[in-house]
Length: 534
Image (cartoon, rainbow, N blue to C red; front, side):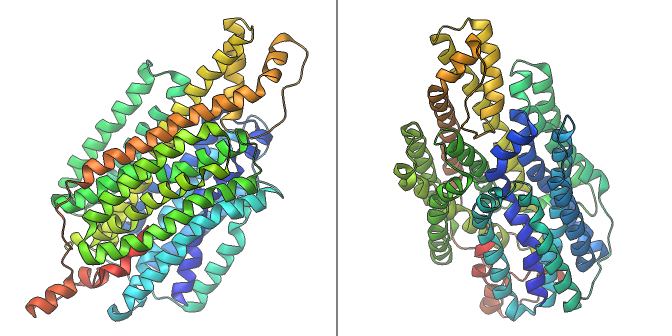
């Protein structure tokens, strides 16, 4: 009962990573959000989840995981309802971004606490299977997000937020029914560390995200990026001197763990942002409906699901290094080939490359996450999972910011060239292109501009060309994702290789191993128990 309760609770957090991307065009069309505004709606959730994940795990230790699960669920579902109730008008963008950030905070409280509940209620001999089921079924809901989003958007885009309400009610009811006991641990809360990490991540992403509006030559852009990096460096130095740090940085002394984290970072630059960019591309350049865009993403998930299982077997037999090398190569090739097909404007011709890109990511996520956990024997499973989840979500938010800036910049330049080729003066073409870019980077509406002036007429006559301009801009994004996977390969070849020695194997080999309380909590007795961590 406790496992079912926690799976319902975290299901909301997995679905929300992908479901909003499908509804993005409808949200922009009704609320009139800017290009960067819609990207912030997606990114606020990821950034908040990354910034506060470690804090959520620490709060679960100090105040009891059941209590934090309940609080996190309530924060998440209330903010979901408020996201769906966003009013039209000038306040819409700030309202939606703020409550999406609050959703991410709720998820950051909820997820590590739910994991702690599962670890606490199951004895060591049953814990591996429970965790595999917890991660496997919950993670599979990431693929459900686009399909559910496409169906709900046909009714109203607001339903993609309201769907969390019945899930939360079931989760809270099962949590009460299971009568989960709370066990607190002594310690202190590292609030300065939490503030430093949130500020550093937030400033970095702000600089990348706003580069489209401020310009790459702006002091504000580079001031935010540099300031964020300086704060993150200060965070690292501060954590080294704290008795109860928010993140135990000693795990990075293990070369394999560091490589696993680096490969996860570069793969996640592409993984979650893909849902947004592929969905909007399908609805703008391919004139697809939300349901069709959801099916478009299933090609990617098909390859991902198959490779995840295969990658787990490779991890068990040969360790993480072969799986990481294979995944980064397949991912880089898949995204590069997929980018080359975007301008053909045929959804069905792209499926082999989408599946290949998905297979590459599938080979990476489970083995890298599992190997990272099994390599870090000292800290608890919850601590190490907190680090890997923070890396993954921060990378996703950086990817959204960087690729979003590239998309809007290239789209604007392409549209300017198209309009100038049709006789509009440069200054008029630039103004019209800016307005079109603000619209189509988050708007899949197939309606053409109205009006009788020369600018409206030129834009109306150029709509087919503009859809091609947007497809060409997306090529830059997908090539960027291929490059990210290529850098991931350069990291993967530095992995020391071999299988991590787990506590159970040490016991069998030496016959003298005795688990500490933290290691009993970790229960890393079988590497296969964590394969579904992706």
